[in-house]
Length: 102
Image (cartoon, rainbow, N blue to C red):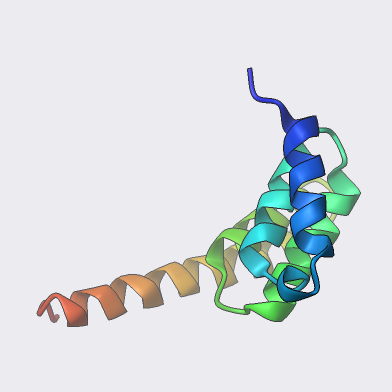
């Protein structure tokens, strides 16, 4: 079984360090952890902060889309569309690197 309470404590220490306070990857892990602990509002706010810091984070966009599914379908679709657009862009970039083209 995963110990999300311990993970939350560790991530809080990481994010408390000045050097890592705006580390979007640690923030994304914290959002995931909070969501698993049932702290949905805090998790959603963290995912939104991840997007502010790194607008190209498709995972955070998809997660925010999930949060809005039941309460705000329009916002949910916007975040899902952003996430999908970012995934498509990432795939296209990898294809160029690997020598594939349309």
